[in-house]
Amino acid sequence: MKNQLIISLLIFSVGFSQKEYDINHVLEKKGVYIKKFSDEEVNGSVYQMFGDIKMDLGYIKNGKKEGLWTWWFENGEKKNEGTFKDGKENGLHKWWYENGHKSEERTYKNGKKEGLWTKWYDNGQKGIEGTYKDGLEFGLWTYFYENGQKQIEGIYTDWEKVGKWTYYNEDGSIKEVKEYPFPN
Image: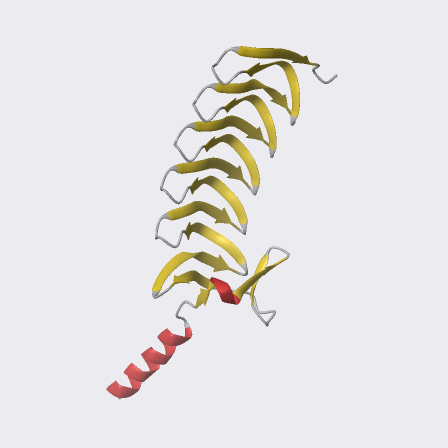
């Protein structure tokens, strides 16, 4: 009787154990992840192999990314990381260069860029900083040279340049100023 109980529990636990998928055996088709050579939706954790090292990437629920996902460089450093809800980017997403320096930070809401976006050069200097609203550039945007000096600064409204835009030389001196009309 005791052996039958143990065998029953093992069969039950195997039946409900979480499936794991190698990212190389998964395809994205119209926003849904399926197993290669099949139309079966993926449900379970996804990993990537680097030689003998198994690196967890994230979880797929009903064919869509869910929760925290982390991608890796072959050297074991993080490549990028962000959260997903029902297959769409949600919250803060971060990217890094292979040397470990931060590359980019973006915030998403239901798959659209929303909020602050910052990009850095691989030397650590800030390259771009601006804000998105409903997936479009909005508000003050500043672009920088690799030496840290401002390159361009101006305002976007729904992805259109408006108002005063200042263009700088690499030494920080003003090259030119342009005025762009506000939409009616």
